[in-house]
Image (tube, rainbow, N blue to C red; front, side):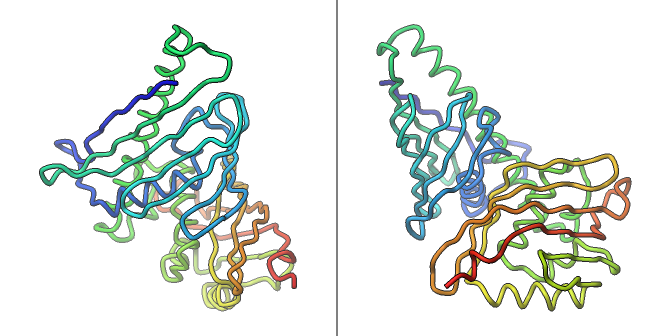
Length: 288
């Protein structure tokens, strides 16, 4: 078994400052879907919600599938406990504050099946994990800095500004998951067409607001766990996700979904979507 712990300053000189809330938001996003943040994780799906701040996720790390119990302590730390696979132990992501300065500490205490303790092979594995998580922490901070800056700059969030498909898609679904109707509508053109499953087609912002708003009233909440994003040269971005729907009775139902988002003019800096086609079976969400 080996333990590695590293501390990274959240607000180094020259960077736009982040608050504790900004950092926590990033950790929460990474816990629910690690794909945009951890290069060595190629699969990440929440399989079960066991409480308000605890869930089980299945990941694929360096080609091996395993399950982790994720525990969220808001504004403080995220704990990942390995439940199966060749690597056992736990990983901590913690927000710390010292002399008024925010830091992000990540610590992992792990044991690898079949590898002798303190061997060269174990040290090599530990070194590789350290490099992976350093990249993950840096990517998380960078993403949260962009989101935080957007809060100050208003509608620039919808603009290209060095933003790739992965970034704007996550921001788009963040507005949906938090049911921010005005921000959600701002992503679309005045002539947007939305086809949501087998519901009647909605044309224009007014109909979209009516249809989506009515659906939001029928559920307790939702969260998109994005699995894959495929941008095309024709301006359509294909998004595969597993959506956690919280029913009005408090039960969480997860269902797969594929969405086609088409930009009116991909050459423009501003992301403006004129067509949304959502392929999903909602029957499990409303089943007795």
